[in-house]
Amino acid sequence: MSDNPFESPHYKALTQLYPLPMDTEEYIVAKELDLVLNHADAAYPEIFPSTATATLERWEDLYELGHTGTLEYRHYVLLAAINRESGIAERHYKALAASIGFTIDIVKPPRMFRAGLSRAGFPVYDPDWQYTWIVKCGQLEESCGLLKRTLNEQKIPFTEIVWEFAPEGLILLENGGKLLTEDGHPLVVEEPEQV
Image (tube, rainbow, N blue to C red; front, side, top):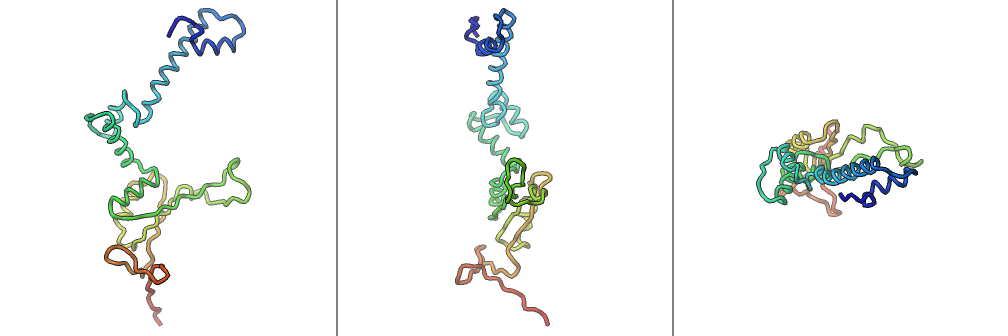
């Protein structure tokens, strides 16, 4: 930083706030504020794993990764580990299900009625529903044990998964597809009632 006080953005700001002539003490304060701003600008990229350089090894140690490869490769491996370890998004759960051979659909929790954000006429839900995701799987429940275990192990703490499976009596084909009627709806065979 130069010794010209008028090159300091903080010195200029302080002259606007402080009506009396500035002296050396105020100039030193302005220089320190400039240094703090420069350090904050340098620290900001280190907060995010995708842009970290000085703290990249600490991020890698946190996820038990090696420190080899190009910077781009190390960022890629780190982000892959973070996505694998932290199930915080719908796409994470879908990718996790696809990796074990299942296709799922997720219904996100409804938005809660909030003062200042919602209006009269908006639906009101039980507050506990904001921590519940509905996972729809087109398979029969008895064939989805691995899927249920995997997603339950990876879910965010204090959240709940409500499962929706194919109805009992649905006829599944060998390739995993469903037997459809002429109008395109899945064919469900119901058990006859016992008399």
